Length: 86
Image 1: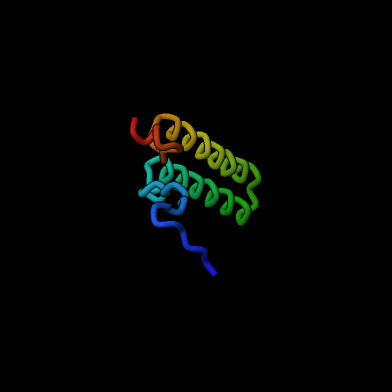
Image 2: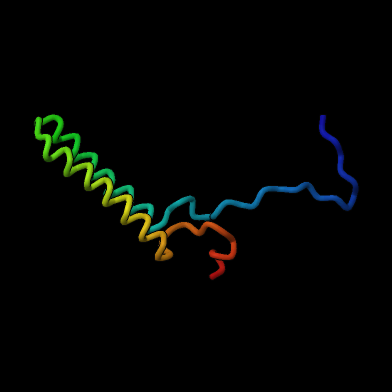
């Protein structure tokens, strides 16, 4: 059963999540580059080319770095309300 609050009390709610649901340029670029790297690595496994597999993993790492740099440049989702207002 729920407890009723007094007439002047409001329940404490968590802060609202960002409205963009992660649809930022940084997120799209990161996911796209990682998917390309995974595709290259997967094709390399099928073709039995170890060097190409490592190239694919390198592309994945580049995607992670690019995503972090884009977020640092302000193209990602804000992490705090004060960053959102800036």
